[in-house]
Every structure is written in structure tokens, then in C-alpha cells.
Image 1 (tube, helix red, strand yellow):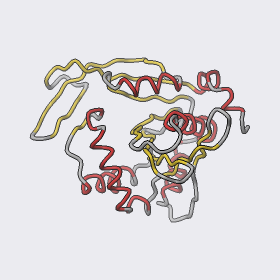
Image 2: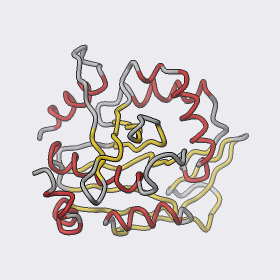
Image 3: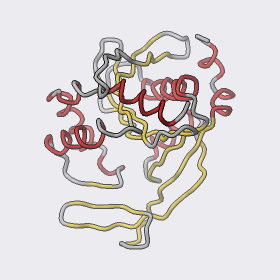
Length: 228
């Protein structure tokens, strides 16, 4: 799939193109039973005050795992949705919903290109639903990327102190490919971590992990073939 097709797909899903696109990705468990769905945040949903409040709460809960760390607010989350998530032609943010359509977290992709995409913003903020719903959500999103969007590879970045995150990604099949030193710059109440040469040296590392389509098929044959 060409980059232009990716752009058109993302704009349709977000409702930017003006056309209606009722879209979600089913989340299946090991028995191929649906346990939830991934619902993309489109223009209309991005204006929902209850959703914005929930996203703000989750960002506050997991702030320590972001490169930019600040005190989240309703206004800042709304700005992020309206100025970053919705307008970006290479980014989608999905809500993780259980079978009662309760939103329990989010998972996204960014830097979508013809050959690869990056997993981003993987958060479980609520306890409802299947205990492995985040894992099954990652499988569902990757399956869509590999077989519908037709990317060849997926990558992600994770802090070295995010033990649960690293365990989740390893179980999905991602393997570490690079490890960067992180430096810290603090301005007022905001902390910025960077792999650049400026800032205070820290013990934290920024880990890159990758998973190819071929490796995904090998590890998750049952998920790949259940509805092919």
C-alpha cells in the first residue's frame, strides 16, 4: 500500500475526508472469541469531554513513561487531540473497549509509512474486561497493520524501567534492536528526556523493539489463520 493510500485511509477513519467510515477492529482471545474492539478516535469522538477527562487521568497515571513529562490537564489533552492526533496523516489512536463497550485503555500507531509503523501510547487505565485485553489488543492491531494495511514491520520505543511494558511487548514477539542513553532537561514543572547530547545524564535507557510480519506469523499462527 502506497503512502498516499495510507493517508487516505487515515483521513477516512478519522472523518477528515468528510465521508462516513464506520470502522473498528475486533479483539479476539486465544479461543478466537471476541473480547472487545479497538475503536479509533475520530473528529467527533475527540470532542467528547468524558473521553478527554479519561485520557487525562491515564496520562497522569503513566506520566513517568513518556519522554515529555508534565502535569496533565483537560485543556492540554484536548489540544493534543485536536492539534496532533486528528490532523496527523501518519497517526491513529484507538480506544481499547471491552464487550460492554467500556473504554479501558488506548493503543496507537504513529509514523505510519508504506513499509512500517510504530506502536505508540499503549495504556491500560481501567481493570474491566479480560485480564489480557491489552495483549489481545496489540495482536489485533498488528494483525490489521500486517494484513490490511500491508506494512512489513512494526517497531516501538519503551523506557528501560517500564518492566510491565517490556514484558508485554516481548510476549507479543517484539525483540530489542537498539538501546539509547537518555538525558534529562527540566524547565519549570516540565521534564524532557532526550537521546541528544544536552541535559543531565540518567540511568534510564530508551529501548527500540521490532517485530516483522514474518516473525508475527510464526509466533501467532492461530491468530493469523482463525479468520483467513
